[in-house]
Amino acid sequence: MGTIRLRVRELAAEKGWTIKEVSDRSGVIYSTLRTYARSPGMTLVDFTAIQKLAKTFDVMIEDLIEVVKE
Image (cartoon, rainbow, N blue to C red; front, side, top):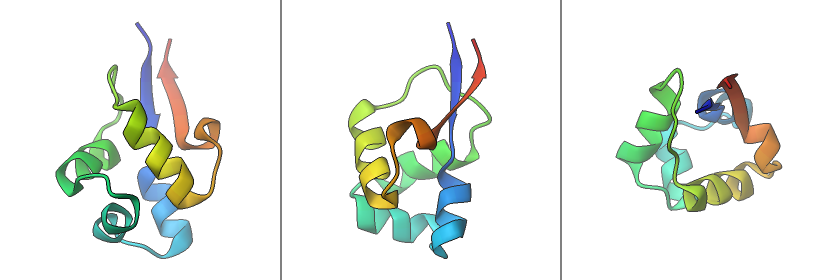
């Protein structure tokens, strides 16, 4: 099974936002978002959260996700 990492920290930094601000803007629960931002790789991610984050950052889903290991 593949592992992915969400580029939450990088995209937030580009916008000048904190993780809390991203949570407020996206509607993704802060604790979930913090986990995504800190994790070096995950096998399971909530697709609805990915959609919300991509929309919030105004990027394609592919730009939000980094494949760490296939």
